[in-house]
Image 1 (cartoon, rainbow, N blue to C red):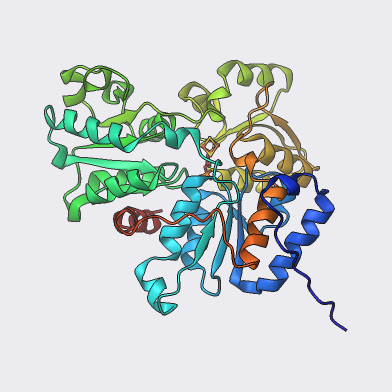
Image 2 (cartoon, rainbow, N blue to C red):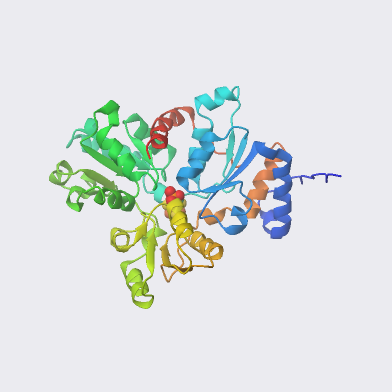
Length: 386
Ligand code: 13P
Ligand code: SF4
């Protein structure tokens, strides 16, 4: 005999869910998942807390999650356990024109269980600031030959700007390929003279240094400076890559002295970091790469390998649990966790899913058609370069 699934009616707001025990929340969420079957997809980023990640159908880094949303076919609802820009990207990719026609116009609803789960880095590059920077730059350099590249950690409005200006989106796993593309294949094969990289200066700098571009050729644009982002005209005309002054508050906390301390106290240790870390940390590391690449490096290492890992705390703790045969340390003595991603908890997820089941959906992310259209131009380029 099969058990009957009982989906509970939604409670009034998220507050009452906060007082439920995790076991109950887990059971209520599982009931909604069973009710929708393959029509509901729970996507989770690797930085998400354990109890949420356990419930996700698919887990990945930013690139993998974009691909999952782009490829989804049976699903009609995505609950995105990540941050705002990821849910926007999922909405754009899952509802792109060919997918909509396959589904005879039916949209996939993308929900972010807590709408306050933003990304501080993405917030450092507002669209008005970008447009102002572009206007100022056009007085100094030929912006027709300046190719914008934005990290996926950015608002859809910035991705649309990049799409309109012949540019490309990248993730931490294909930033080099995206910058290469900008110099060689952008604008139908002509390529650009220079690149403007948004919003993470560290990912932009670390990647471009690896391509032989020097710091002298990479001025940083400060959107709060009076004029020319705090640069001279000569700095801008001599540039190859103009970096936006943005950073990840999590990865910026790893320091060169943390690396030195681990090397001193644990001879033979390997330092493994995300490219959102500052240059001095990135350059001292033995291995670096996107979240997905960090996981692969640990999975591939022999038992007894010693690591100090510089990326988000939840992921490092999960790696420790999943690889007891290796010695894994967190690179910083202070907690570096993504506080906004952490906002997505079982209470918010349950609240969102029970409202969906009751036909009163909440926390929906829907990017307007014009922004989606242009963002998609830049996102499709991202999915093509590796
Ligand atoms: P990846 O998932 O591309 O490694 O990026 C890490 C990150 O900061 C997500 O916001
Ligand atoms: Fe944004 Fe950093 Fe959190 Fe990633 S880890 S979502 S870049 S604040």
